[in-house]
Image (cartoon, rainbow, N blue to C red; front, side):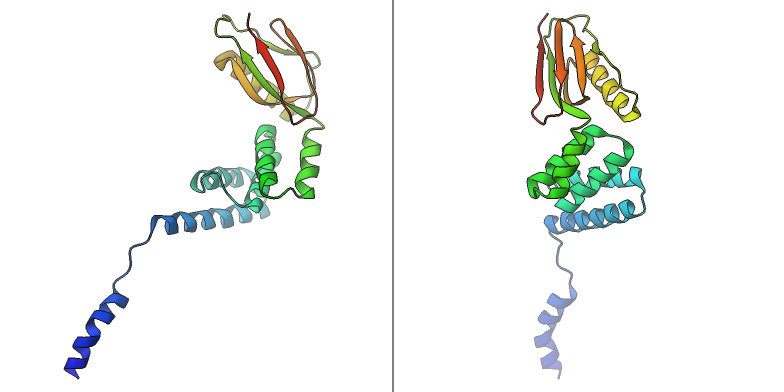
Length: 189
């Protein structure tokens, strides 16, 4: 009996000693945990917490969450009135599945906004202000316009959405239409 136990001891040690957890397994578990939290927070309409979970999920998953996670992230951004985040999350979801729900959501978003790529020359000092001819009344549209104005003033560039309409920026005059392809604006002097 004693001899039998001695022979089984190495096998018992293999079973009893925990194996080291691989780094990928830890990340997969965290992605799964955050995905479940995101789902639950969206179901409970806890939008700020859902948005935070989505951002953490993207960071942990290396920018590659599942379609459902991008869709839930879009719902959180929509509830919070963050049009640029809505757009980015819809594009990420569409890259995984060009579903009807994403197409409809993008069409609805682009009924109010258009994509822009604005860059000022490095020698413009002071930087000219971004001016919209007819400023919108909607709070989320005003937030997007204010964020663009700040980015242009501080960094001399802005890539994202702007409400539909006519704009001036220094000597440039341009119109933002509800299109995915960005309107490119370059102001040198």
